[in-house]
Length: 150
Image 1: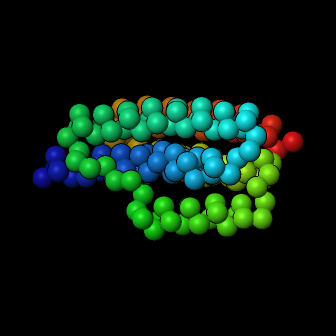
Image 2 (image 1 turned 45 degrees about the vertical axis):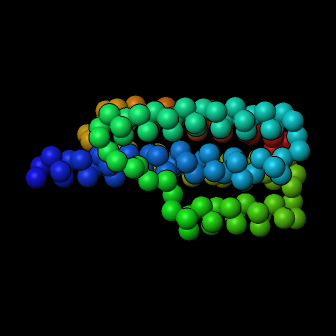
């Protein structure tokens, strides 16, 4: 029974980290077609590549831990994110506005990392390491996105 409970807790933590990563990837995919600035597109594509690496690490760890089917965000969350981006960019497709949206999402990702860490202490050092890399990526992305507000 203890082993089952531990696996449930690891699975919960894994899903939390994975969904944070997937939200970032989906946001970039949803917004990319609206971006006109080539430098900004290049930055977002670079960020997406790094999130995809973390996504793959999560999937490999899930396989190693024999966790079946880590869960992406549900369809409601995906639709909410897509709608939010499309409504927000309907009247303002400027680089500045899109950078602001991406920064807000990235800050939310940072907050989620801190909450996930606090909620899942001493559960998995491997997941902690992925979460640390995600947090570092998010902070780096904030610095990279800020100049697009000018």
